[in-house]
Length: 431
Ligand SMILES: Cc1ncc(COP(=O)(O)O)c(C=O)c1O
Image 1 (tube, rainbow, N blue to C red):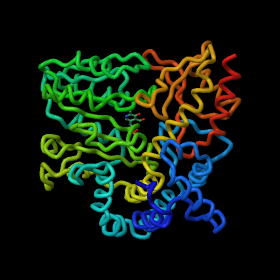
Image 2 (cartoon, rainbow, N blue to C red):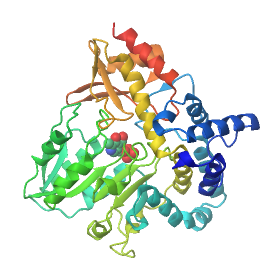
Image 3 (cartoon, rainbow, N blue to C red):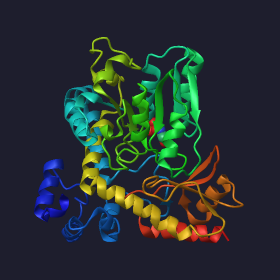
Image 4 (cartoon, rainbow, N blue to C red):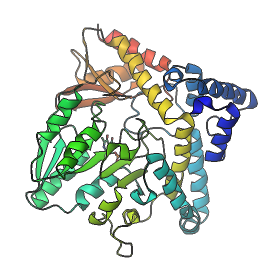
């Protein structure tokens, strides 16, 4: 749709959405003209074509406050915020400090419903299905601990789910006598039907819920959440999706996954302030879930009952809107295409090195930015240290089940030159 827009329409659109051009808005007039031209050019391109337009992505990079002495390829853990988000946070924080109880509770909090509407619009669901909270852990724990389950009920989950989520399920197993049924997945796996059947094999008449990690943090493997959900729903099994790594990374709306419950952090791929997250519950399921922090004054079927979190950082919460605007400025489709392109860019250059082993698929259906590799003769710790000590490349060490390597996660500000540094390092280490 953007392709047919004129530049004027595009900037009008940005202005309407954000009140300001968020990418590079602080730049001097010469640079502003350059960014204007870069935007104009990519509007005529498909997302795949614009994924390779290094000049456009250079301007996106300029929107961040990076330390160029380090190549940060661990954006999976938590992402940096663009300058506009940092500034919004600081402004809200400064204002709050003038009189916290007044500015946080009486001024900033007036914007809560507007923020909810914006998030719901982006996520493709009703505002009555979105609760704003602090992170994916809080969102997912709310479901795991809040669902009414009894002894003998079964939950299907995978050995590659996030450790905190595995632990909270184990707590319910210990406390309430529910049974956990484990799916084992080969890594990588490029057979959608096989993945679905591995989950389906664990379903029984006692299964109440399936826990699906949409993008597995250890390897970046994308699971076909919708197809697994379809099989679960055929049997009346509910679906919980851990979208910590897929939200604002892959281009989808929450209802596309056909899940009942969904949790994500917003400080990962959306680049919102640290300590921000989102919980989605399908409207007709809200009343059955007990909030972690109850408030009897809120109706049982009101999603706001999950926002009774006590005092927290309202400045962080309200700057989520600035991160969302920044994301929409880039364009979710264009961002998804760029992240896929960056993955292909570096993995294609090292895939034929005999000592290099991939734990992630190179196919777009099964991976995007997150990618895990190993080198024969290196333990994960040695590889992570080797990349850091000599090349100043920051990655994440992975040693879980059958995966032993390091995970690499570029973000929208990562340049192909950064990835050339990685490629060069792998070539030198994998001799
Ligand atoms: C798959 C997955 N789920 C949940 C989480 C928890 O996210 P947070 O620490 O932001 O709550 C993470 C964190 O990396 C994750 O990778």
